Image 1 (cartoon, rainbow, N blue to C red):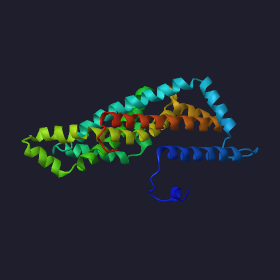
Image 2: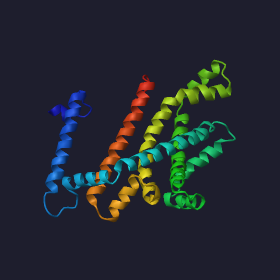
Image 3: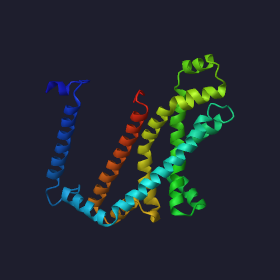
Image 4: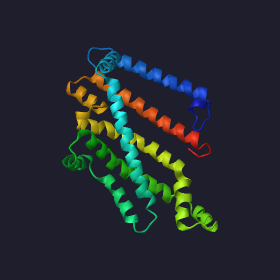
Length: 256
């Protein structure tokens, strides 16, 4: 028992699973015990289960697919734009442009969405471009950080092999860091999923999980809100696992 309280102790995967299961059981028991009375701040398990049932009857699956479609389309466009900015960063004439894009991450979310709404009137396109603009700034920042961290020895080695400047850009930065790009996408996916629900709650015309949360909050249905939070968390964890699995499968010898 003492070794489980010892820092940096190595334990088997089976024991890690048992520890995780124990914590989950303790949380569920604590949740049930603290919501047994008539007055409680947090919804009871029964209220949350009822929320799941109501959400399913109201087309939960359709709203999930709407959110996933918005997520994948937005991050696909943001990846293309951020790669263009990041891979042009080593070129002196384009470097100020790429660095200027990274500064947009300090802009307030609501203010920028107001101006996008003035230009784009379709609800779905508005959601997509709000997401794309914000994601591009964060992805570009992360990709430039990856490029900046490349050791000088790799560039020197490529030059010793008689590579031209553009060949160095292609071989060392683009091809040589594809696995890092996937990891950057994985890290920013959490931001994507978090922003997605916020954007959908602002522009509710196209539905989605954000619409369901705003609608549930409007009617003070806390059981449904917690149910939706659980669904959002599970989908986010699933997407994170999928991208991590993809990276490990394609780049088996890459460090995670």
